[in-house]
Length: 355
Image 1 (cartoon, rainbow, N blue to C red):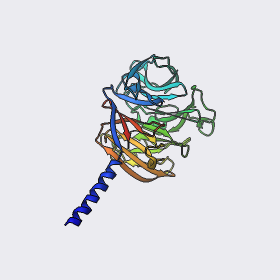
Image 2: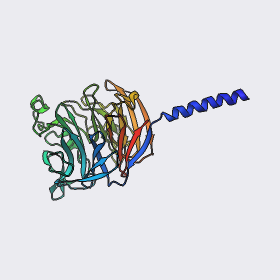
Image 3: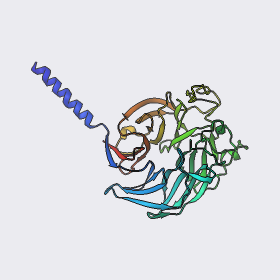
Image 4: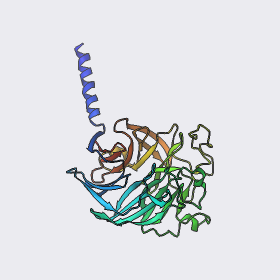
């Protein structure tokens, strides 16, 4: 009996030790108004966007918040508003639903020289045509090799994603000043494509990141009633919306199309039913060394953080990190100095994930 108790105590100690190594969540600040994106401007300062149109700088050491003035003409409508914010080399890039008049808006991108008090933005991209819809703006941004990649959602218009003479439903690539790269698909073998378009056939990509390991860009994309996916951004290709349904259905319950077929880009991972994928990062850092190279993907509906291990565009493993713990995950960023993760939720909080 004594031996059995001793063995049980050893097992309990080991279990507690293992649990102590699990990721821990800490709420940093709360009370924000629909935060949408965050970006590090220094080791301990971040800039956060709120969908109603606010920008703020948060000091992670003393938790002080400073509001930043700006000149953007935003139409907050449905899913639209002030969306992605990205700090890069003393400049701030934002994506937003621009008020184009008469209820019309577009996924637009603007840039300003960095200031902690006032940002004077100028547009460098506008998705054409402007559309009267509060749906599917996309709006994530990534910088690679001094090119700016932008996700432009299809605004709920379905087959517009198959029309390369219009921007909605595509991945955009431009120079950091808004100029058009001369090696974009239009100038190679896609003469009828708009010059800014890099890839077509997406629905509502709300996650995008650059992998420092293989130098590729990856996105997460909302399907309809099912059919969310994670996949690679690929030059001149087509993800198939709304010819393909990616395994999902219309909200009416009717079928859309096949999950995938030859001739279209194939995703790495599909979710049926939908988990409402949001932001993502390709992890690199010291806090979770065992996660290096994996994709960390947030969820709105599922309120989860998932880890995707993959190689050469093939899924190896999916792991649930946590679920139903902090609410709807909107954005994820890595603090490069520590490798800790910072997460914002629709519930208005900023969280830190660490060991």
